[in-house]
Amino acid sequence: MPAPPAIRSIPACYGQPRAEYDAIRSGCAIDRIAPRLLVAVPVTDAAAALARLRRRPFEPGSGAVRAAILLNADGLVTAAVTIVTRHDGALMLDISNPTGGAALTAAGVATEPHGDEVVRMRLRGPDLARVLALQPPAAGDLVEDHVVAGTPIILCGTGRDHVALYCDRAGARATWDHLVAAGAVPVGSDALETVRIEDAEPCLERDFIAPQPAAAAGFGAFAGGDDRRVLVAIEHEGVRALERGRLLCEGADVGELRVGAASVRRAGRPIALATVDRALSAPGTPLDVDAGELALAGVVMHQVALPAGNAAPIY
Image 1 (cartoon, rainbow, N blue to C red):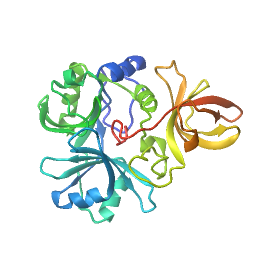
Image 2: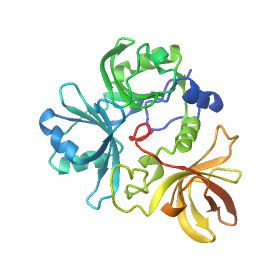
Image 3: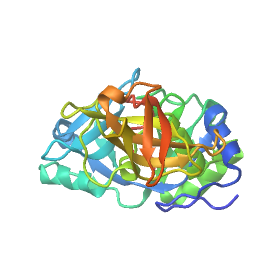
Image 4: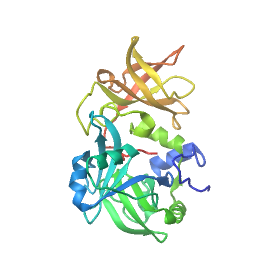
């Protein structure tokens, strides 16, 4: 098995994409060792930090792990955040981009970057308990006192059959090797993107290049504001996935593609996340994808429903 990349890129696959897809759905998958923008907030500033974040608990759960978004001065989503409340009341924030940490600092919240000594691995699938050798934390719950391969780890329940694992970089490879030996299947971006789009899970870093209204970014459950367009998952005709494109209904512009992928499960059929007029967001609604000289027939699969999985981005 190749060494897991401790960088922001991720391989398309480690082996067979379909086997990796099946591990996510019916086994236990692990994606990679990922450096994260982690920020520590002391107990004295925890309330001030939480006041700046639009957050929701994972249901059910203790609330020790929460999904959140950070809005800029214009009320647009600028970062997604996973909030981890440690046993001593201090916070660990996993923030999707550097602007989020800067915004908290500018608001007068005392923060301390973790640097690059802490990394994250994400595991998901119904076989989590066997791989972890313990009952995984439920969505919203936290396990701090656990050791894997001699390395202390933090386990965060981030959804049904979803956990995020944090550990010191020095022990990350031993932790990875132990989990893979226990049955976790390394998965690359082909399988991850298929599942993410099928499940309509937004990822700010992948889907958008600028701050967005919460509803258009898939986070309407976290904040009000402009909700004329919402984020949906669609599938469409064609021989390849499209990264960008306009959506049409009877010739009128009604939305745009945000990110596309070739479905591992659907024999390469293109699927995508897209923002679309709310009135056209119901499952089964037909839409055309403007691919230049061609209009490709498409259909809405479903809307984004959050919190679902981890609100922090995949990459």
